[in-house]
Length: 324
Ligand SMILES: C[S@@+](CC[C@H](N)C(=O)[O-])C[C@H]1O[C@@H](n2cnc3c(N)ncnc32)[C@H](O)[C@@H]1O
Image (cartoon, rainbow, N blue to C red):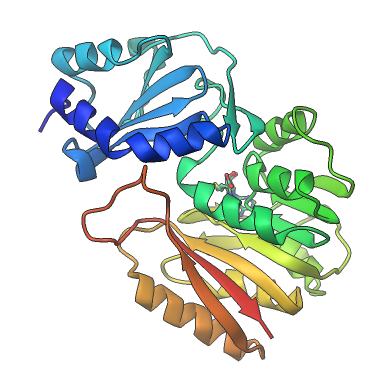
């Protein structure tokens, strides 16, 4: 299966209504072609403001596909990032990093397609969750775990959260988030960027002492929140333990439940395609109840229609869990 003019045209047609609506909401960042679901596995094409970004995994773009992609760029700057290891940016374009800004729902974010990491600076499939947070964050204390470039934290801050605490161990990602603050409506609450292992931060927030044998971690005092965003990667290993959302989601979720105020909510995600939604939700309920709290309401959020799926089983699973 290859990318053809016809498959791109079809993908655009299917998104015509969504794209019109997104533009009317001042959104210039969205997915235009979504891999296997649209006929070419291992290829995505996104618009990020002034950039048209093609990403490939496994197999790179063939000469024919490259022509189709470049022809579709119109007035946008085409960028191709090939993500197979080892990444060799020299073989793709452009070679030099360049800065770009894009909009989502009237907010501006750094969407530079070449930077220190490989992932785009804003995850587009998380837009549906950001929409929800916009509605729920006013006057709330928000904890944004695994915050990456803190897009979610920025949304909550600009939309009236009392406080936002973004936590990630990647300094460069937090720096991008800090720079985005000045680009957007200044919230009246506070916004903090806390560089730390999320497990160490969560344990301290929940009032647990850190095991000395694991070494030091920046101190943070115990505290509770009205809204907790838990958007972990599939797997990461740190001094304070392993984040593994397939084998042990519970050890991440439990301290979140402990720092969630009565009536508060946790926005939890799981990105692993092989994890079935129903199984993950069962585990989420079990952990919450074991931690001594009742799930008052659990609502599944699905990615918007620029992320089509064959069967409704989106790799990104998102749940809004309201606790008693
Ligand atoms: C999938 S991204 C999160 C995306 C983010 N929630 C958003 O809204 O864009 C995963 C992030 O987790 C961070 N990370 C992974 N393991 C971590 C750990 N143990 N402690 C702190 N950050 C971690 C990475 O640095 C990365 O920024």
